[in-house]
Image (cartoon, rainbow, N blue to C red; front, side, top):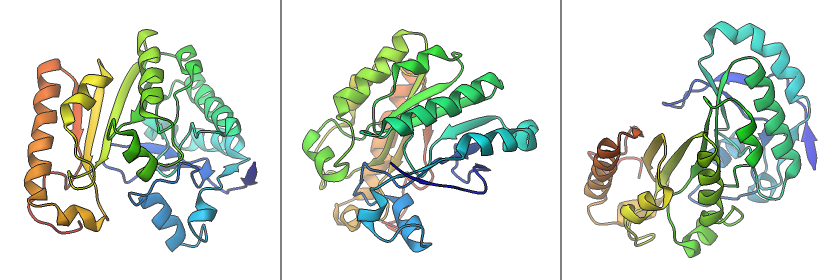
Length: 258
């Protein structure tokens, strides 16, 4: 696959529930059409030319070397390291990316650093080989496969994601689910409860609304929709002692930034 080199890798993220993060790939083959914020920023700053360029991922070939240099520098400030906020560590169809991701996690694990990962691909069973204080997650905003084909066209099926997460859970791993960006009913008509029922027991759920899509503001009372859906998730998690995080601006007061 295509490769690039970088001068740095590890950095503190501005994402509200994150600490430090690593993005060891430029681009993402899953080609999400929500739209994808990471793609919009990469195009804006000239890192990729267009969508076709974005879905041809480039692996950072010197990622491990950079990591081994940077960990000592930030070691006392790191609470955890997340893979990844602007790409996917377990991209469908790219075993080279999975291999690099596992190598990164293996090194962080050896240094006693807690990791988390999030994917629209399949969580590899090898994650069970590491210590059990890491968190392995999937993105799951629907169970409707037609919706997935339209908005996450080259990602793993929802059933594959759920199965891989449950398998790790059965082996004693901590698991989590990101229900973000959650679509409004005029985009896909669905209920939250079947999604929650499908994931079973998890340690944490993150919920967030869909941004940067004009269809959201065309949904009547979309603010009320996100308020009520977020409250459903809060009640679900509270009853089951599941940790949760509601993303900023999900509980809406107006239609700004729809």
